[in-house]
Length: 186
Ligand code: GTP
Ligand code: MG
Image: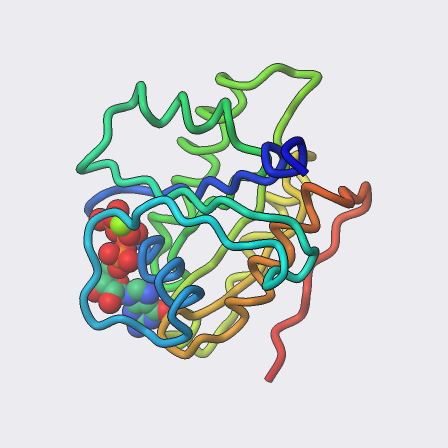
């Protein structure tokens, strides 16, 4: 059990502090099952007990705030993580660009080639757009083998939030080779 506990730390990563992609809101929405109107910059580390998680393992969720934490703290969290969710906002091209220009290289630089952590691309704020970001995301998924899956969600509508955490647990416990990209459920 202890080992498992250590195996499923989830780190959630921002894009840019000016871009406010909704990392903290996603965590709060998962935990309270409602969208918080106001959130702190960074959610406190949360441990979800095994019996209420889809894969029945205790899961730590770690938020990151560029405004509150140093790069050094980020690197430490990356080295402890078993899966990293890179959050972008589906209505912000800039935040999508930063996934490949900034976050994936930063994470790869900080992890051993043989012990890479699975990555999940999370497109938040799907309530704000009509069109899916998948067209832009699929080439990125094909380019970077460490990306386990991608999901579009909305902290506001609580859409795909529990799915996101299920994918994150699954990526740690049952990593898959082939890419799986869930279609938007209408
Ligand atoms: P930093 O900690 O500053 O890097 O930001 P963050 O990524 O944690 O984002 P945060 O959760 O603070 O949300 C930023 C803004 O986006 C807030 O005004 C939220 O209410 C809003 N927001 C978050 N999620 C959603 C969503 O799914 N839909 C919409 N429409 N707004 C959202
Ligand atoms: Mg935050």
